[in-house]
Image (cartoon, rainbow, N blue to C red; front, side, top):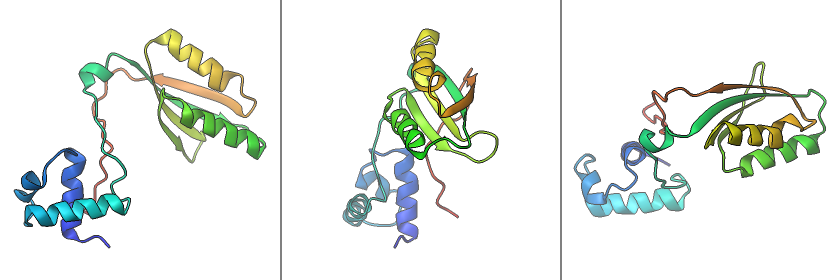
Length: 154
């Protein structure tokens, strides 16, 4: 069970996953040793799934990024749908794969070096797949905000 201290720690760690217990103690009214124990527990319990480096827009912004909205066939076989999902999730270019409601069934965030690389990805994974009815692509011109942080105050 998480308490307010855990929520505060998680909010801070989402901003800086490398913050030390001593640094966190400056913002959360617990001793560094108590914070270290809590963070270890949150990791062991799977609440903190991973700590990753987030590349700057200076690096990531040089890549071609695309939002791809995928519409699937209504009566596609389950095995075909599962195979498509598995392939998409295995591709390094797919940064995000969401099942959504509405007109489209999947939304992908794809990051590639350039347009030929995107075309190769789309041809290999989407264009020839009988499960895919159609897909639409919007290319990212500029990232105004990009975060994976989850607000925990609610």
